Amino acid sequence: MLKEHDTVLRKLMIFFDLCVVTAAFFLAHSMRFTGIQTFNFGYFMLFLPVVLLIWGGLLYFFGMYASFRVRPLPDIIFTIVKTAVFGFIIFGSFLYALKIQDISRSFIILAFVFAAILLIIEKTGLL
Image (cartoon, rainbow, N blue to C red; front, side):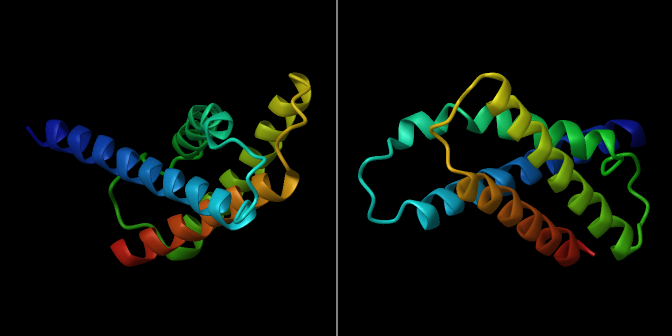
């Protein structure tokens, strides 16, 4: 019974974290391309599932969802920053490997920095 509740809570936490990353993606797009009509929003939406897969996979890999015991705040912040750095490298490598040059570096940086900041705020608020 308790393990079922843990599984539901873990899935809910993963879902909420990915919603925060999605919000950061939209925030980065709106800040980077305000007033510029040449960039198609639908084109950027193609990369949102990749970003969500990277964030979700790395947060899970680095043990963010391993247990529900109270973790110290510096450990949580370090995990999120580590995820942001490795995620940025993986996403940049993905774009480089596929020779995609239509996405600006500042948008990618903003998206990962905003996601890290919003996740830190979320986890701090939950503590």
